[in-house]
Image (cartoon, rainbow, N blue to C red; front, side, top):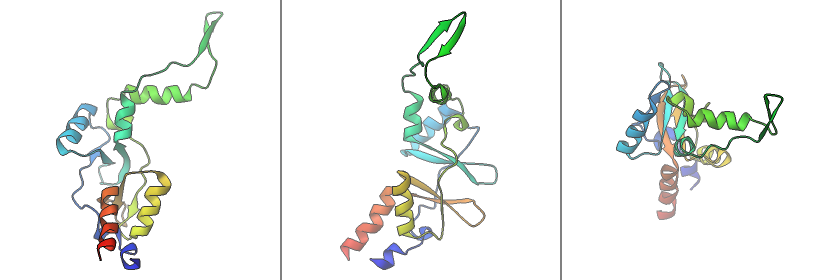
Length: 159
């Protein structure tokens, strides 16, 4: 089991990664995810560096009901009774038209040399389901999902 836990990410990551760029249209993103039957994608820049990630959580938040903050009208001005920063964040997500407006940034990534144990800890500590993998230059080279991790752990139990 110890040998499996020390296996580098490059040995069990998915090497064919679907990624999008920040300026991609939200409609095209939904179509891509639906046709590819995946729940999230890394967002990359022109040099293929990971700048963010869009997951099913981000997509669902795009359609949540927007609750306006409590306010009062005082002498012709609106006075908010609570912090409106959360409202502003959700408003941006709700009105998103490009991937940049919707993505979580920065994305948590793992290096190709990260071990399975390090990947497990990173995913667990950050409560994430997918982890883009990058090389020494920071370029996207793969992705690891929880399914990949479970598959590796299942191999140990079958030995």
